[in-house]
Image (cartoon, rainbow, N blue to C red):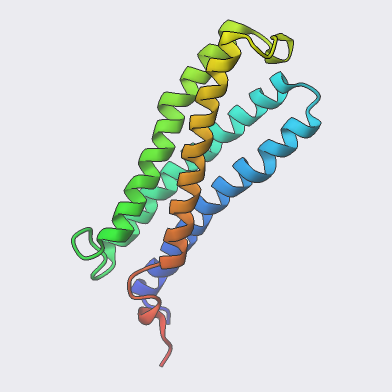
Length: 165
């Protein structure tokens, strides 16, 4: 019989890996392919925005689930495990800022300027959008690094509760 602590540790690892997967697949596989094959930057950007929105909400849900599993594991609370909890908090904050602050700002800029494909390269609105997009990309990268670090660290007991007898 598998122990409850082993199931929690495995589910925690799965949550962390899924968060990393959502970040990597959306940002470093799907988005570049969209901009390569969608036909227009406007269509690619619209589709990428929807994909990032879904991925971000999934990541936030998984982070809550991971926190709940961590809290139920012995010796895994915030006071005993500051690095892991700090990384999870940083990941949540980075994704939340991207989702709830930068994405609406970029959507408003896109709505105001129309199809970016038709704007000259030196257009001030295009430059402002590029700046916010760059900040968003850096936050996505930092989120990805935090998630990768969390996956590498795993639970504090590193599977000790799952050893078979």
